[in-house]
Length: 411
Image 1: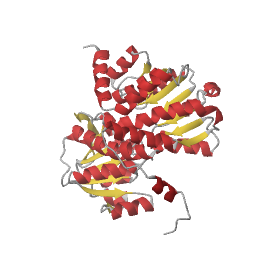
Image 2: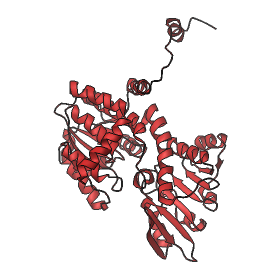
Image 3: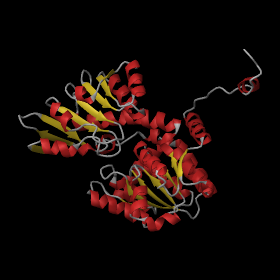
Image 4: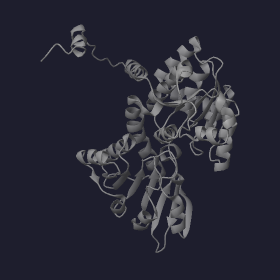
């Protein structure tokens, strides 16, 4: 079977659940708002991403795409995109050196705009490909981890162009981070292990929007959920929602399944690994493979049994105790499963597409820094999604609008 044919079927299937982005792409094809622009992107190379790439190409852009995770690439989708005229530099399972080489190849396009998922492409631009910076007039960032890095770059005056924080919209945080990550993370874990979650003790590290979604889905499947946090407000929120909250030091001794969703490194360290029970399962749903200290796990183990199940490695520690690491500590939902459902990515990538259109129009007036997606874009995406699903909402009357915009009305 030709890979591009298989990829085209995957893309067509995803597009069925992405009516908003499809409609935006149809408008783009008529209006061509990105005519003549070169875009270098570093995103997960999946069927859903392919629908976004198609919309941007229809808008007139020339695109070079690299993968933002070497284990999430769908090779048949990559081949279908190449057949469609998009330069794709990605292959499933490549080593780290090849991963970075692919990002460099995408940057060889000499981009006007960049799209990133994790800030690796923007980081390389500012460290190794500074010769290209003068030509880059703006970018978009898709995920929490990348925005953390970008805000630090901006604080240090290192960021040289405006970047739109696509992740920080109300629709994305709700639909993608909470519901998408919650469902797809548990999907990946269950595909990799085939465990039953009911009755298990699941430790969720981090109670941001992603962690909240993971905790909710695990609780819904009958798990007893423990939350670990460094933020007092988020910890209080988890407590008031009925979750047990404690430090990882204590959670490590009782957990059956550990899921990291923090955007930080070394959330599970050597001392935690040493305290875990036999058979404990380790999974990461944060963007980079640094949340679980895999190097410490390698040093603790006297034997590693690779592939005891697909995407599952067994680490045998002194005394015979075993720990199971899923997806090499990388994003479990995109490595062991297919990532977010297409209906979820319809919202995220619609906001992304409209943010790119806005950025192309406004970039000349924007100083370097991190910018929120304009609120009208967020509302438009939500409105289009409701319309596509046949859901109606109320509209303010003239009297209600006047009441909301007046301080003279009184009680």
